Amino acid sequence: MDETISNANEILLPYLMTYGMNVLGALIILIIGFWIAGRVKKMVLKLFTKYEQLDHTLGTFLASLARYTIIVVTILAVLQKFGFETTSLLAVLGAAGLAVGLALQGTLSNLAAGVMLMIFQPFRIGDFVEAGGKSGTVKAINLFITELATGDNIQFLIPNGQIWGNAITNVSAHPTRRVDITMGVSYDADINAAMNILLATIGEDERIFKDPEPFMGVSNLGDSSVDIVVRVWCNASDYWGVKFALTKKFKEQFDANGIDIPFPTRTVYSINATS
Image (cartoon, rainbow, N blue to C red; front, side, top):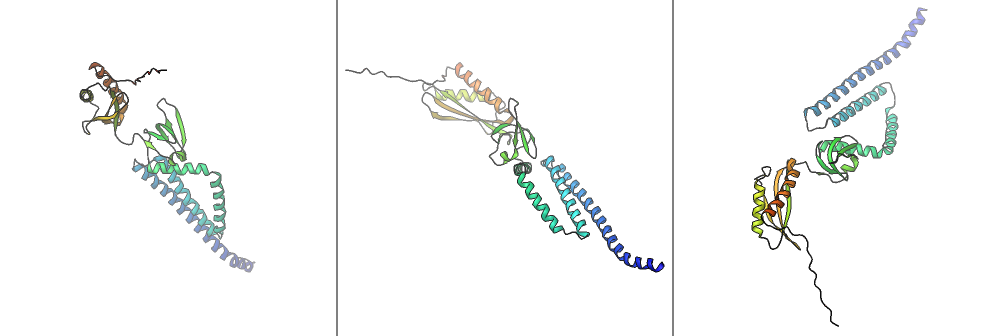
């Protein structure tokens, strides 16, 4: 009996030592792998929290992506420890990933575009933009869609792929803007007097910058009017207020000083035909 037990121990002990070491090694790999995955996730989140210009949504996505990538590598290392052929498993996973990628091609395209928008940040929440064929204020930027709201508060949900693949106009990108207004006066009017009136009106608005100084010049000799272009600079937030106010004041000052703003006219000549 003792001899049988001794023989069994001699046979089983090498297997137990071998597989026991494999199990111990697998546990160590799992512990270290999951610890590294958690640390990397925290580091990525901390990086995106530290720098305000980096988008938090993108940080969460990249942190989770890094964590699960390390976990997958860890699991593959554990399987290899027990003698599994990971090469064939990787081939199967690659084929499955390709099939899923083809099925979700449009969705993945929007995801990639969303990541690019968050990295390069051509616009931010609160900016007024023209993107994806729509205009409005940016309300939200997600990984798949961007939300815009028009001036009359209509919501647009635009796939990110349509935005990143086309031209983007960001009206709010710079803190200052130039206001251009064209005023037409009649050919009988005193152009210099009209321009002095416009310049005096501009000087009364404190929102208009002195530097760069306002510009004024005759831009066109039209069919029925001499066109004077006015260009002034102001804060981007004051753009529409300045434009509307100046247009109104220009008209009022022209009326008060007898400067005519002409309307299109047509002269008809009648020729009597002789028999």
